[in-house]
Image 1 (cartoon, rainbow, N blue to C red):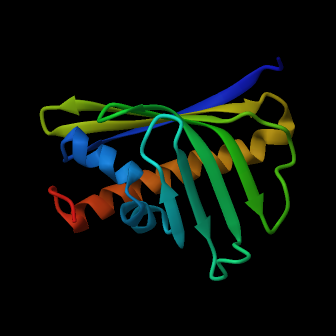
Image 2: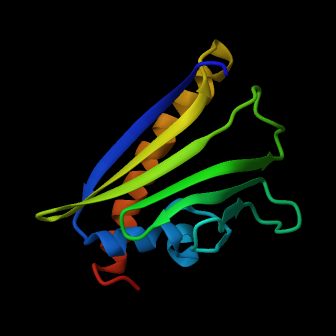
Image 3: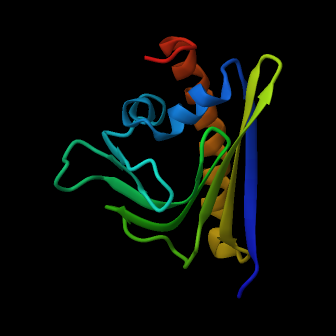
Amino acid sequence: MSPTRSHTHEMELPAAPPRVFDLLITPSDIRGWWGAARCIVEPIEGGTWAAAWGEDENDPDYLTVAQMIVFDPPRRIVLGDYRYRARSGPLPFEADFRTEFTIAPTAGGCILRVEQHGFPAGPEADECLRACEKGWRDTFEAIARHLASSGPAGR
């Protein structure tokens, strides 16, 4: 197995772990914080987590589908067995990504953490790794905004 790289991002959020966990598995919430046009989630271990972007549902700009390897409410989700499709073409490298979300309670809410594993160690993945690091920082900011606009109890 070739060496791989990973990155981690975390943020403290002013909401209880069950609310933040729900943000990760509720399609209407995912559309709200990630800007996906469509989303399908089967919230069980072994279930499907899928999101698509773009105006044309018959030919989306971007599609990502993963399996929920671990589903442990309200503490942890691990996504793996990813399949991607982008109009711009495939990734310029082979990868076996895993994305792990953990939620830890704090006095004021919780800490949401994401670890994304599986980026090849070679330079062919440098640009993608940098884009994902920035993407997760931006995504967590969007999660915080969505949480603030939807209220602590949710919808």
